[in-house]
Length: 51
Image (cartoon, rainbow, N blue to C red):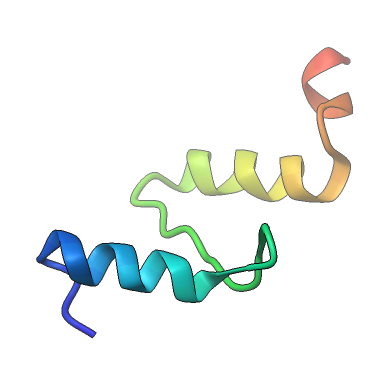
């Protein structure tokens, strides 16, 4: 699906959201440090940042 138009973006977003929950998503990071932070956040939650 071409997501360059606003209509396509909205249609894509509504397909990802099902019943108020995101059914599928992924994040791409250019910076390896950001990717590592997101991984730790996903695994351990906010407890990593408060330590």
